[in-house]
Image (tube, rainbow, N blue to C red):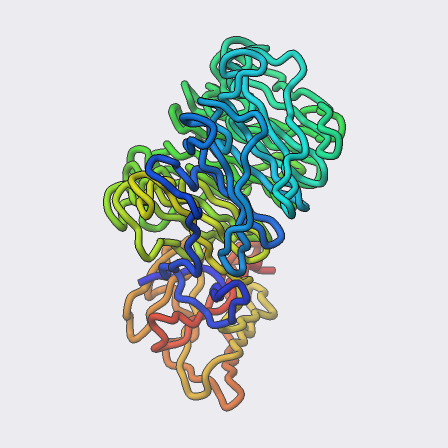
Length: 514
């Protein structure tokens, strides 16, 4: 059984209904995206981005301008129709245009880490008008150098383009760097270097920007052991370093910083080689961008060895989307993705393509915007081996099936519990615990639910199993709080009887006993 936290997710064709989903339920796509000229080995879906109803997808092994010259595509998210194919004006063999991609406010930014304007594999980036597909500018770093891999990662927000160059050598061979550019002029604004950069850190492997804060991953930094990884925050307006992010209990070879995202003050960082659920099962972390403090560690309920959970990551509107490109649900390395609630760290759902294939690598790339999650599967084979594809999932805001309120939570006194929005005549149960988590309950006394409270058992039920909703869909009961619980932090959640697999759940209430 699954006891998941909080409310359910609604899904539809991007104008989702509010029908609650089962916690932990697998969600299939609403639309599948394929390029009009897809071909064997193009790796369409290696990178993906979405903004304001436009999906941008990279195919860095496309060969229009020579072997592995690369391309990118734009699609209309509501319909899945292809809008344009993007090619650089000076594309050439080995450029790997499309190896990174981003979109914001009508501008598409595309990285070409193999370009050679400043020497072999020095790299470049390009800007395009999303409405016309026209190239706007080519971005090159001042004092660029061979083997810098400028353009390996890219992000754009509010007129600023952030580009990673993980093989730059300012702080030693492959120490890495990042650059900021003005999207309107193409001019370089700043070069970002970490205060403690060192040989082999790969600073700039991943990059994200939101609301004036730049987040940069350094997946081979060694603060927690060789290749343990780290991430950094910078002020986009000054280029000054704000914080260095390290996970609690980080370990060697975690590759923390392999993927990174930021939205509304929360930084999400992937560590795809973390071993909490066995070797290279993967993990992800959430941090407060203003303080650098770790907020949560994310791991899937069904994580397994070599799933590579955290290979890709995105965050938007309180939902964290994480790719596990080597998960095996649809065959070896077919891939999957997961949704979590940023506020609580609770797992909400698992995403799988309806036609997933062995070595499809679904979850290699992931993006989220305005209720749509876009996922790349560069190994899919609709247009030939490793031709690639992408999928769109309509995910609405989290809604609660039941409402739970707790009043007068005072040691030695009677607390009042109110469950509302229930089905008149149906039964409901309420449980408690001392810390959040995910616990599944499968058909215990007719209840099937996924609670967001760790360690839930029969002893955690309060108020009994057989209280029924009145004609107004409400249950009210009192419970005396033991006198020795003053100052104790508690969690409460309710479930309606007999609703499996819908799992009609309440919000999770967190409160401290007075």
